[in-house]
Image (tube, one colour):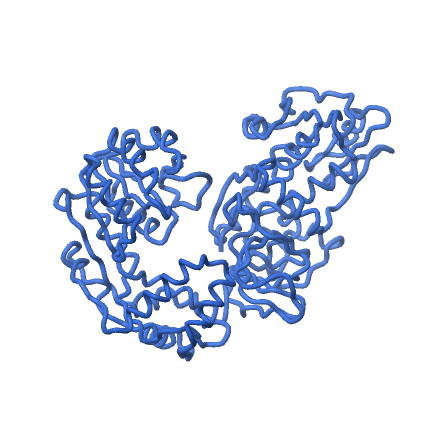
Length: 571
């Protein structure tokens, strides 16, 4: 097939592998995303939402084949999506499951009736499901769960993707239903033993009761029916060996990968150490090292957070270079990262109100978030908003708190005020524009041509291109978020009406009306900001999302002025 292939679920366990293998085979690949996503740089990203079929026409235009991951617990809405797909594409490959749950069975029926050439993939248990034991293995080398004798034939996500790639690009698979397994039936206890052998750290299975498992899963927020379904399925798997198919080899010509090979590839996930971005000396971006360091343990009053993402703040580049050593001394080596979002993995002594599985955000004044895990004081946390992806929520703490305090503590902005925000295209600016507008102020924002559209979309009443236009005066408040020269800072003071105030988080404004401040950590304010996000009154604007390994590149680009808004880094 020579036409373009659309991949849904391209950031997921299987979708990421499908994308990579298609690219390696020379295919023209397009990924459907609802917002900024961590994708391979050579993939075209198109916006669309499977829950809104009308949003998909542009995404499907010119596409010949679709890899379909349906991420909902019901098949409702799928028929309309397939109608759009059939207007453009001729082939669909659907990722179902060997369990063929009710919604998957209904989805398969709709696909068969869609008029598209179709192939259905029914993988058995993903080998990647073993990652659910990683926290327990790292914490003490013991997996405590019921049904250690439950047998399954774990299939490597690369093998599922390899079959999907063949079905997407070859004509011989139309009408096929492929049941995919790994090459061996293994009990859960045997999988745990293999992980220990591969990592070199002894790991054992500790048989717990279904009642204990039920309590743990319920505490993590699992719906009762889901808990019942999982435990019932595991109990049924203890009856004997799991089925093993030869489908992977028959379709791809290569033997299915073993669970041991999967464990070897993912051994880092089970170690008692983690990866972190650290600096051992002040200097340029090249001083950032990605190192293996001990996994932290939560002390009294702390929680251990599995970091979903951190975000880049320009002030961190100043810290790394040594410019802040007099005002913000740090002990070296230093782990970067002030913002974080993630899931609580464990709690320390004396912690109340938080439990493993809680989704949280926070700001770390001492850094440490640019890592896979972080031990954070429980009293700096706020519940992560459910209205945005957990990774995106890492953009909130530092930037939103800074904007909130600049506007409402120092400038006392209220309804009817006229507010000039200088540097509105940055991460703090994106929140400042929205918060000022939500308060009822008229917002004048400075922005370059590169960021003007994004700032306007956030609700600015007027955009001023500071490179070509004079800034307007008569403002009740001027909020400076940009690193500018002293003369430019002094000029900002002249734009404030009598009785008004000029506030700066960067270059101080030299006048009686000028105020300079450094934002402080305030979880109560953070909770109020989250409530605005949940209500739809505040948007989290993500400009870019990258793996944490690209942190030095982001620092380098920031220092040359080539970043806009909030940049997310994913460990």
